[in-house]
Length: 390
Image (tube, rainbow, N blue to C red; front, top):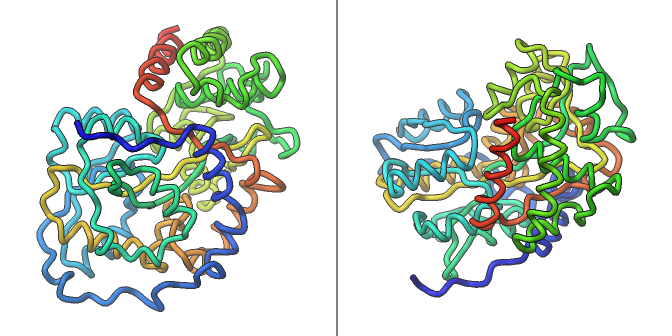
């Protein structure tokens, strides 16, 4: 293998991402920071006409909403075949099984750099074919951390958070008092949902905040195996003891929606997109960051080594980086755009939901997922399995 470039530490990337995810940068300042790079939709030129056939995209289950997908197909003449997934583990396992073949685009999360570098299953992105001037600079900076051998492998697509969502007709809490600890209150027994590994990380932030398991906001767990086992061992004890509080685990967006709307879940640790989409549809559901901070991630676009329809890949990237299309994507999914000027295309409901999801100093408390080394992911899976099997 070729010599690897030094990866940023967990604390370095966390500090970078925390600075990037600010209200000024993400909501109000996108236009002021660089205005709209393109004053209208991209003109379909010779490259677009050359792109044809089908582009095979393996992407999160709710990341290609129908209006967005249909508009791309109409303008480009390229059909999208979407293979959905609900976790980074699912994506990584699929790529390992196919040796990076069968798909043109995938959407890995920025914190999984180390795992993808070890696999060596991603092509270098030709930045000369990417309209980078259209991307919010701080988002592009985070994606730059997903590089090795001096070559880029990741572009920003959508960013979002995982925090707390609940049925507003059955429960209520103000921001100043909202905590991951609310999931484990006596009155929530049998009424909560979450994704196993991130729910356990939320327990860790809660136990650190109340002083029971000091962990430097969970960052000490990324130092080495001894620290991780010390911290996650205590988290697992707490999680197993509170297993009766679980109504269900979820794996994807549909699981979160079904939990609230069909399975009598009252409070859940969820992504922002599904509950905010329900809220926009006037369902009795809301979403908010707790005092410990919302888990924050950046999902991107990456090209597997076996990609075939190269022209269509870059046509999709240009389409996604048009401000109007990016605004449509944010409105339809409930997640947040990474493109300059996209905020000008948000509905009033989307803007209102964003402000209510991150009130007060919530954007200053965001908790970006640090880089996840392979050893960390393996040990975390060990503790997660104990929780699930309890």
